[in-house]
Amino acid sequence: MKGLIGCVLTIVMFSGARTIDAQALPPLSSEAEAALEGLSQRFASEAALIQGWFRDRTVLYYDFGKVPDGAAPGQVLWPIHGFDARGNPVAIRGQRPIFSTIPWLGDYSGLWRLTYVVTADNLQPNTVRGIEGVNGLVQRKKAYLKETDLIVNLPIVPRGTTLARDSTQGMLGWYQGREVQFFDFGPASLAPAPMWRFVRGRDAMGDPILVEGQNGILDSIPVTPTYPDLWNIRWVRVDSTYVANSVKSVTALRTAAFVVDSATMVRNLPITVIDGSPVQRVASPLKTFADLRSPFPPRPTPPQ
Image 1 (cartoon, rainbow, N blue to C red):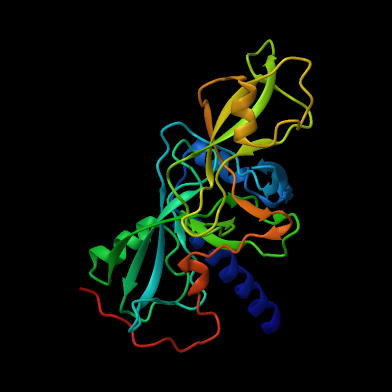
Image 2 (spheres, rainbow, N blue to C red):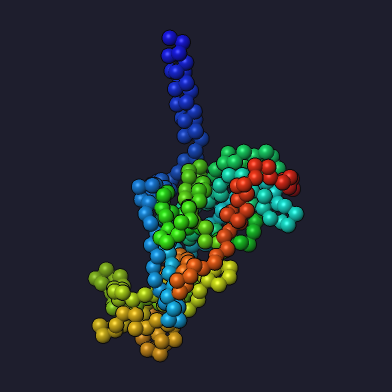
């Protein structure tokens, strides 16, 4: 009987703890709830590589979707212990970054301005999981924010999503206390570069009819940070006589004198392969200084 009572008490206590945790989560708008549902594991897939042309050379890139008009970089906050003698962040082992928004919300772009949350307390990893928690630490003078000018491309994807031809595992972060998965493509430019896509007019809904088999053409590639990951899509109008991929460069495009419409959308398209060779991208500090190896970080920097 004592064993049965103990078991029942354990179940009640465990259930109560789950209820308290659920109540502790900040409420979400209906739009945010729907957006989070779209990031659940049942929507996981493999992000395909798409072929494009750069001056007659092949490039491969991923497509992480359209960037809403006027969207600015979001804020990604990363709690850390402080900085070492070289000014590098000293990570709280296992601490995940905290995102200010997620896909399908109007202010999401996939690009983020990095802000460090420097705490001198013995903060346990992932006890802070949202912006409200960060603000609470700052208000209680348990931490301070260190803004940076670093813009990084960290597209958020459904849990379990993988990358084609890349074994890199997705990383985990927080949005208002909820887990989200993202990939780290490193520093990126805020200025979109032009990409040309070929169309044969528009359908009844006004959407462009893409030329089947024709790869997009671009005139910039990632060589060193910051990478051109945002692309202004411009439509090249061709007739029925055009043969797909007979034009593979901007020079040839200009020589052909096709009609080119103004840019109508921006998409997040990080290039990862050029002529069959992987692009040597530099990861963001979130990955470079994750410090998952040592459980004893250097002495932290005290709050100012």
